[in-house]
Length: 500
Image (cartoon, one colour):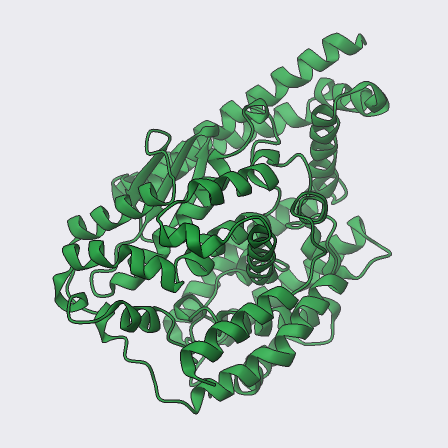
């Protein structure tokens, strides 16, 4: 096989993969936004066909021979080509190490588990989901043995989402949070509650959309490349390449803060995707380095920036113009305190910036124990309730507000939850390093996001999937992974807000 021709063939292979992904992503986006409710079966049929073609393409003997040839000649490849080859080998091994018949049965099990989860929620009864979840945990252990026989099985779970970061690193991250955040929450709970009624009212979609477009433009989103649509569950997706990004958001007609911070979070994701180097387009590297790193960008713009005094003061006139009642009756400082209100609750997705980490920590400790065999699935509800009492100081009243609130485990997504907190940790570390070269909040106060975005583009965005998140954080951002910066950020911020 000729090396130069192999390099051309490999790039053409990646273009084909990107084209099929484009079609699948567009079908998914349509289904989540504007497709009529009766068209789901039609879309499923198309997606099945696309997935079948993709599977055949990736597993074609000629494809496997091409990738193996390039792998054997990797010394002659560019950094980008070498990484793309490694990416495809890594993707293939995770599936090929598992016997095909077992993988097929597992797919059917997940489908059954999702149906059981919905039934369990309808009946407010975890026991309906229990047998299916137990089977998923057993299969996860089996798959871990196939792929990482000499490693902690939870490392296998993490590796599906976060390359090169182990359970040891996550333990260190959560240990620091466990040491400080519950105590901080306890101190806050003894203070007078913050009044956040300024965020509540009856808001029209048109006004909320105007706010969303204003915020996206403010933080530097190019609306020629990034579309905005409505969906029940917010998300951001690339269609084929970073040249076409779509944000789907949900407008909360009764809480303007929910709309504001959802759009800031999705805007952060979109900035990361659009900011990738153009020479990565139509390759398998055109995408975020990891879920935790892209989450860091969502959290940076949503929380670090969006919940700062500087940001609230800057957008306050626009908020008053759009929503004179009730916001016009409150000062910028009162609004700032309102959007940073802390209050322990049962539901993760409704939690505030501080307690969100504790919600995830509960899930991290429980799923790690299940995968390791230290916690039986039948004992999960009791263990859940005890940890909520220990970390958040609240009693869980039923399964619906407790162990049944997330669908991640019925999807088999063990190792996914901790990425949310790692994204928070990264966002604070990024802010500290950025502040060494500029005053971040001075930029925000002036409504100047170009310098901030330029820094992120240079240190993070442009690399796409060329390196894993550990390399990007250590080599380009310039910091070892640690939760110290994040814990310090939380302590400083909420000590000031609550006068601790």
